[in-house]
Structures are given as structure tokens and as C-alpha cells.
Image 1 (cartoon, rainbow, N blue to C red):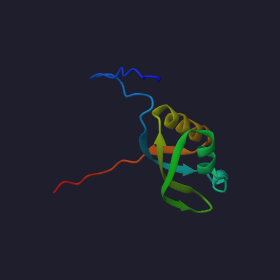
Image 2 (image 1 turned 30 degrees about the vertical axis):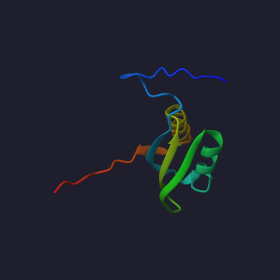
Image 3 (image 1 turned 180 degrees about the vertical axis):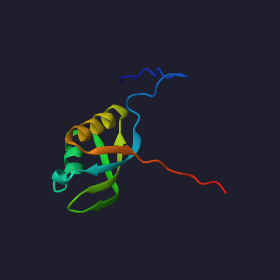
Image 4 (image 1 turned 120 degrees about the horizontal axis):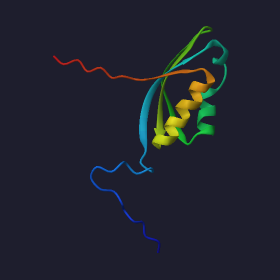
Length: 98
């Protein structure tokens, strides 16, 4: 039986296998509106995609996309989309206190 040594301790970085979630706003340029970018993203990178909201016209595509995966995979996916010409911004959640 193979054992795995646990090297985590207080203050150490998260293990590479821990999955994270990121919600992002994507703004597609007109030339990419008919391209299946979200599908391609899931094929090229080890991330789980979840479209949370979308609005597409002939001029622009705006998508709220949730990505789940290892941090390095999410970063690579964001870099890939940016290199395609897609504007990628994090979703900010505003909490209004009364």
C-alpha cells in the first residue's frame, strides 16, 4: 500500500490538488461571438465551466463564467482567453449593510 506524506502545516500554501472556484465576466469582441469559446476552454484546460449568465448581440458577447479547478489551471485558462482577445474581469460581490 502506498502512503502519501502530508506536508501541510500552518502558514504553508494550499496543496496543488485543492480545487478553487472563480467567477469571471467575459466580454467577447464581435469576431468571437460565434466561436464556441467556453467549449474550447474546457477541452484545452482542466477546468469545469459553468455559465452563470450571458447576453449576446451582434456587437458584443458578455458572459458570467464560473471556473472550477486547480489555481494554476484557472490562471492558464484566463491567460488563454485574454490571448484570444476576450476581456476577463473578476466578478465582485457587493454587500450592502443596513
